[in-house]
Image (cartoon, rainbow, N blue to C red; front, side):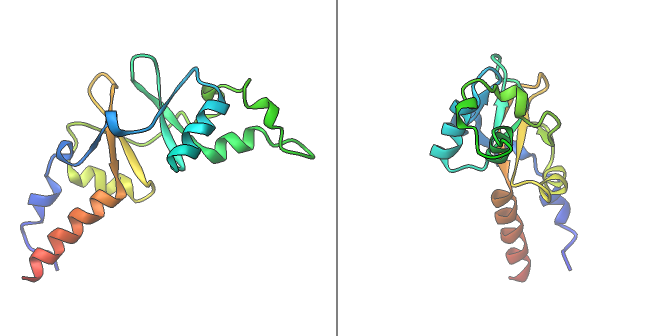
Length: 147
């Protein structure tokens, strides 16, 4: 059973735990699916944030979304990659955190996502909070309870 100090962890602001936007691979709305596939392949990520020209979060894009868009009836149509735009195949409705949110909110949302995008009050992309970071903080907290 967790101690009464669990509120200390749950009320922590997330801004201390995010990976800043400068370190996060992303694509922009006008990019081609070919460019996005290169970004995803070279970084090794399964999905990346999609930003507009003002760096506001617009959605997420995954390798699966791109490959599904080029599946033909009898073959994969690689030649279509250049003409498909990121905004044609991306996920528009995504879970995200506000920079002012707490660890509790992140914990609630991260169950179904490997990472969560973090935005400021204008929707500008600030970075990501990963499931790994959240689990590390939980582990640290639980191990401290045992001592």
